[in-house]
Structures are given as C-alpha cells and as structure tokens.
Image 1 (cartoon, helix red, strand yellow):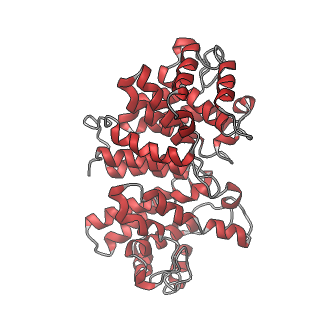
Image 2: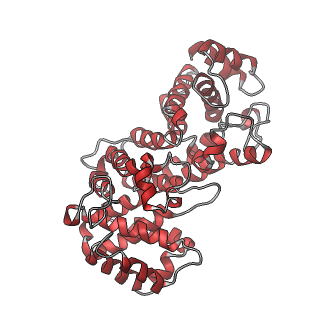
Image 3: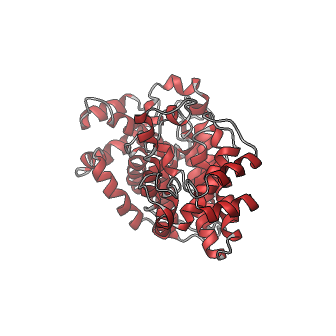
Amino acid sequence: MKVKARFFSELMTALSLMMDLDENRKLYHAWRVAVLAERMSLKILPEYRTQIFYAGLLHDIGAISLKDHVIHYTDPEEHFRNPILLNHSEKSAHIVKEIGPLSMAARMILDHHEYWDGKGYPKGKKGDDIHLGGQIIRIADTFDILARVKPPLDLNGVKTSLSARSGSEFSNLICDLMISTLEEDNFFEEITDEKRVSEILPEIIRDLPPVDLTSCDIDVRNAVRVFAQVIDAKHSYTAGHSERVARYTYKLAKAMDLSEELAEEYEIAAYLHDAGKVAVPKSILDKPAALTLEEFKLMKRHPVYTMEIISMVSELKDLVLIAGGHHERYDGRGYPDGASGENIPLGARIMAVADSFDAMTSLRPYQRTRSKVEAKEVLAKNSGGQFDPDISKVAVKVL
C-alpha cells in the first residue's frame, strides 16, 4: 500500500513526539522548533515551508541514543566531546534522507548545528555556505533551549540573548527574522505555551502544501521500518529487534493460515511495538540487575506510550491495541491491562511470542542469550501461562 499524504504527515508527527518523550513527560522540543521554523519560513522561504517544517520535526532524530534527551546538553563544548552529539546532525540527515520525499529537509538538518562564524559542526561551514533552512532550524533550536531557562525569560530577555549571538551563531538577517516573528501579535506567548504548541502543530499540518509523494516509492511497510530503526537506535543491544519481531510475527501469522492482509497488518504493528520504550530511561532499560518496584512501574508504562504514539496515525488506529498488548499474558498476569485469553487481540498474542523469542535469542544485559532450541523449550514450558498454547505450538515448529 502506497503512503498517502495524510498518513505520511501523521507518521512523521508521531515519530517526533516519540523522540520528545522524556521519562514520563512530553518535552515538545521538536514540535516547538517545527512550528517556529515554519512561521519564519513564510517570510523568507515560503516555497520550502513544508520541507522546513519536517526538518524542524525530525532534526534531532539521530540523537535518540543519548542517555538523556538532547535538550539537556546545553554546553556547546560538550557537543564536541560527545561523539553521539557530534555526529547526530549527520545521522539525522541520513535517516531523514531514507524517507524519500524529505531529501531537501535532510540537507537542512545536516546544517542545523553549523554556526555563521564557522565554529559549528559537523563540517565547520561558514556564512552563506550553510543551507538557509538549516540556519532557520539552528535559531529555532536555540530559542527552544532559551525558552526552558528557569526562571523563564520574557520576550526582551530572549531578544537580548539572541542578539548577543548575532554575527557568531546566526547571521544578522536570521536573528532579525526570528525577533520580528516573535514580536508578531502574541506569537511569543503562544510558542512558549506547550499546550498551545500542541494545538498549533496540527493546524499547520492541515494548511501545509502536502509533501510530493509522486516520485517516491515509499510504502507503509518501508515508512514504519524507518520508524522502527529509530526506536531500536535507543540502545545498542536492541539494534534490529523491531524488524526481527516483525518478521517473526508475520511468519507466525502465515503459519497459522491467516490472510496475507492480516499478516501484514500484524507485521506493521510489530515494527512499532516498542515506540513507547523511548520514554523509559536508559538506566532502567540497560540495568543488568532486577528492577525495583518503582522502576518496573515505569517500564510497564511503555506499552501505554506506544498506543498513544500509534493512535496519532489515523490509518494505524486498528493496530493500537495489538501493538500495545504485546506484554499481556494469556493467564492475565501481564500488563498494561491484565487482559487474559482471547480478550487479548490475536495479533498481540502472536507478537508476545515473537517478542519473547527474539529477546531470549538476542544479547540483553539482564539475561544470558539462549539458543533457538532453548528459547523454543521456554515457549513450550510457558504455553497456557504466559503464551497462547496454540501460538506456542506453531512457534516451536516454525521459528
């Protein structure tokens, strides 16, 4: 199934929200940068406002493997010392370039940490060699950090801070453009209000010229595969996890004589099943010892976040409970809802087996890696308890 414009915009918005989940709260960093960059583009690059908007949404996608959200790294020197930070512009641009219709946005993202005076990264570009869209994302990114200072700065305080960087971090033109944008009507109050930002963003998407998908061969499966790569980049040991779970889920569904359409739907849900894990601190996900009660409570929230993220995409709404139910147990002792038996969606029951099989046969900090034979023995042993007995039986044969 080819990607439609609305599906594409909703998926990109959900992806950016996923990146901005930070230990049980939404930071709205990417959304604020996108809203501000789009508003600035209307005055200087109106024909590229769609690409600038998506560049703002996705500019930090390559920084997802940081221990903390990228906004917590406010020391410019640390950006040069930390290889993840130093490389995140290039990594972000590479990921976004894979999303065919956003190749121009990728070029903007590549330059969004370049400074007007040449002291930025990754290439040390200077002046007009920096993509104008990248310059807009740079100053919008800086504004978001200033907006989070405690106690909060008023408009004059923000203008003073921005003006102090004019001619070094930004060009005089871009600085003047930012200040004039903030001064319009009550835009400064709106852009610093997270609730209002969450309202403005869908309004912009509705009004934006759609992304040109005519020359693009991207389909739903490929689009969610990019999403899955970002999810798995959060931790080195989860590389490829979502794609393997998707493959196992599809294989099990077909072995159970389900239709091709249903098998593909379950496969797509599996690509996205761990989206909510991005909100769980790395210290918990990487912990080699048993989790405390509080840590486990936080871990149990990740399927809820997965469902919230996926529900933002209209065409995926039927997959919300499937993706979010992969930690439910057949005996009712799972989470987040404690559903049991056939009250758990079939796709979720299949995915629970696929997810556990991959976790057991992959390198994880909290358990030894099992062989496929050993993993199948665990599936059989827990048949009727953790797993649907019919699905366990099929899995032992085909995985």
